Length: 70
Image (cartoon, rainbow, N blue to C red; front, side, top):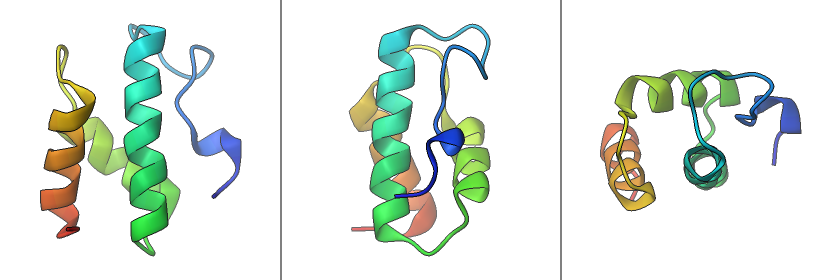
C-alpha cells in the first residue's frame, strides 16, 4: 500500500464524517491493490464519483466500473 498521506483524513478534508472517510479509504485501498494507477489519480477519481450519502458498496461499484475492475 502507498504512504498513508494518500489516505483521506479529518486533517486533509472538510465536511466528511469519520465513517464516510473510512468508506472512502477502504475503496481507495481496494483500488490501489487492483490497479497500477498513482494514488493521487485514484483520489481524483474517487472525489469525482463520490457524493453525500453514497454507501461504501455504491462507491466501490462506481470506482470498479470506472477502472474496469472486476
